[in-house]
Image 1: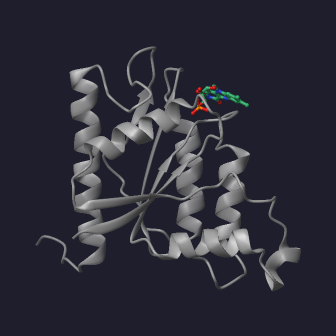
Image 2 (image 1 turned 90 degrees about the vertical axis):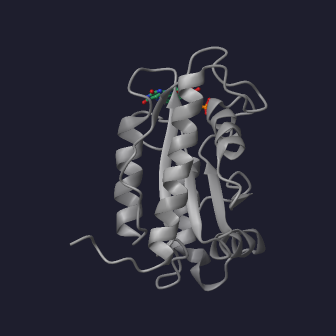
Length: 189
Ligand code: FNR
């Protein structure tokens, strides 16, 4: 440690509950994790015509991912999947062929919804994409956050003690997971 963690917020909304969740996670994370937001809102729509000559915004975006040791995805669920903006950003990161910058980053996935399933379906789809891109993923704990009014404020302060403890534990687990991915630890006998 310290470890560099890039975080994606899957929502572009100015009132995003997932952005609030990301602020809470940054507040509660171990101090040995250094966070940088990987911004996705300024990327054009990807198509492979760009592969020969990525625009500067996409080069900078890929460089910002390459500089990280781990990636945290904080995403809403849109129509039982991940938002198009996040998928677009992942597609940019994965190309041109052979230059996928998400490969081998230690990753974790979390999301918030007002609904009871708390982005579970979107997270499963995101895990499938990350698997294809060869990103090791923290399998457990999972975190499906059902947001209710007042649970997390605009500064990321969590009003409920058990939710705060859960989110803190999630980030401690991610820290330990990053450490395991970056240092070769044999499986227990
Ligand atoms: C949603 N929402 C939603 N919620 C959910 O739990 N499952 C879903 O499949 C969907 N689908 C969906 C599609 C679209 C296009 C929108 C705009 C919304 C509701 C969603 O959870 C809610 O708007 C959250 O506030 C979105 O997260 P952010 O943008 O506030 O972070």
